[in-house]
Image (cartoon, rainbow, N blue to C red; front, side, top):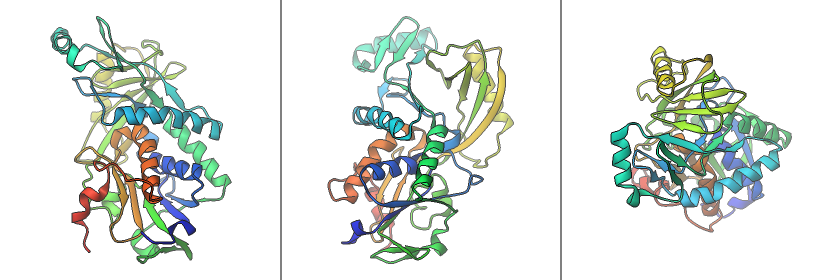
Length: 346
């Protein structure tokens, strides 16, 4: 990295959830930065996110990757962010996973001693998961947009990295302003449009959600049963989610709508009003690990690849990105793009 990097601002490209969390992390550390965010008609996944954070994964109820480190940080991060933005968007709430059938119940109970952990509470009907909840991502993004606009550090523009940036090994120029580093937080668009990081191991996955209103379901917990039913308040719920790897359009599909309706039936929700469908493409990766770090030869960086776990992963790795930027630490080797340095030409 360049010697005078801390004397110049950094440029964040993309203000979805990842870019927003990184921007707040830099803001809290008094790092000077500017944000470029594409116009609202530019397709993004963050506004269609379920926003669930869950410390447990898979049918074996295993702890999620790095869960102890992530969850010890995310509660304080979002609570403080609510205060900073004078908002209400962080909602811890229990999550319930009912046993799918008697066979699965027996299978799990036989292994209970080896898989039990502090996040699980067992009952005859299923397993309650503690320290779960959801983030109102759309609210976070809107509050943050207003905050950064009030500081005059946000610009709405769809950046073309190939033509809009003048890049040297020492600095980057954009619209006559010199930057120490450009940080790309573009979500799945990076694979399609970024000439510097698009060759990394992205595996985008389209997802669709349905918003409904119903009196048939509980508003006291998230139901997780081959999908989720997330209470939003006022008897409104998000139902999700679908996965598709061959279509990245922003158009809802009839097949996904049918899939979500079948999930509702399996949840025992028969009477409901359908409010809307929403669509997004998760910036997932082939090895299910984020893409965080610095280009080996140019003053460029990436903060991406968080998939469906952006709410829990982003705060922790934003802090790790900052620590490496300041020379005070290194990004976790499983998330650092150092694992792909062999793919970059010299």
